[in-house]
Image (cartoon, rainbow, N blue to C red; front, top):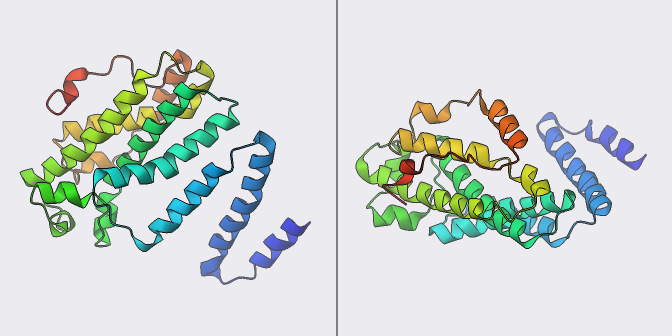
Amino acid sequence: MANHEGCLCSLLLPAESRSSAFALRAFNVELAQAVRKHNLTERWPVKITDEREKNLDDKVYHNIQELGNYAKNTQSSLLYLTLEILGIKDLHADHAANHVGKTQGIFTSLRAAPCHGSRRKLFLPMGICMLHGVSQEDFLQKSQNENVRDVVCDIASQAHLHLKHARSFHESVPVKAFPAFAQTVALEDYLKKIRQVDFDLFHPFLQQKNILLPLSLYIQSRRKRYFFKKAKKEIWMAIS
């Protein structure tokens, strides 16, 4: 009843605030139900909210390690919770979740860079940019010079390495945990595409949705794998 009344009261909020209010109420209620239902470890939701709070001020990542830590505390923590919901308590699955989460975080920072750039913001590791003599303005101007591509290549390579580590646990991870790692299909697809366009972060090809993704996800689930078994190793020969 209290939730019903709360929702009704939220309808009276200004239109620009209404959706946020509903999101907060849903987060409060649904998270509490999930924690009780699956006996979830409370530190993972806390890590996610704490890290998100730190990022509210448009935090700049000074190096790839800082970006990796953010990804671990958000994306990896979310995967740990997903494993718990699936009833999985396994060290190998946790290791895989750590690396898949870091891959997801790096992937998100790359894919969102053009959108962030349109708002004159950049959330790529500045240390790697400085190493190649690339400024924030180069990205904001959507430069396609070799140095900018080298920055993207270095960052994408880190994502590739984390995904490679995640794959290394495949034989040890319980099959029941595989659905938690379904996102690796999309991650592999993006990393393959970014290599195909020679690390041009602003190439239109990277912004196109993969209409075959649902089919790929279904195939992987039927094959009981969380990665493409026949992934072409030569794709990353130049940077592995």
